Length: 277
Image (cartoon, rainbow, N blue to C red; front, side, top):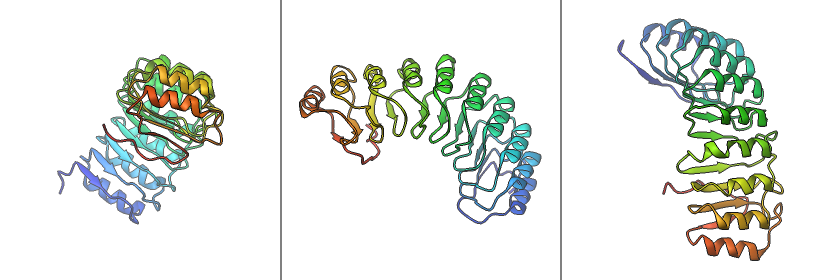
């Protein structure tokens, strides 16, 4: 199978030696999915870096044995990468900065639950990867500075996830509003961030907003916010917030429901994926 271009090896017990063997044999691999391979270490990444220079997609979700050292080696040699997932790994700014410095074609980067990632590497990423269009930053340590930098760049961004980023506050969200206008349709999750009603008043101006989740974000929802949504967001169908944390009245909620007959409901602290349509 020397002509193999794409290989998926998920949720198994692959060793570094096995990955190295695969890399030596299939040097034309363009896509490699190692999702959930918890036994892998930096040794596997060094082998990939040595033998797979054409690699464009690599999924390392949940590979907890890898570290910055392995990703730096990978980024230095696999400069054609376009899609990289490092979710639920122990990497930090050093790894992301190496990717930013060496992978200018990068389009999709997923860093969910990488709490060692801060503004420093994300700012470097948006400055050096002009094609970035999908960023998964849930539960990282970024602040508003990363969002302000992202908002200022002319990149084709169409997906950004920031839920669980507790250091993100109103300044970052408000800076992103003009760019979010280009997302169609737009699903926004601000759970467990530091935003307040000030962000809600700006988000309410988004004509493409379909779903908003602030169910674990204290003080984001107020009567003022609900009334602002009633005047804007014509395609809004889902709103999630925790009634115990909100400052709303039934009257304001009635106004929102009357203005948005397609609103499927206002849900308390229970999230489900909005429908495709």
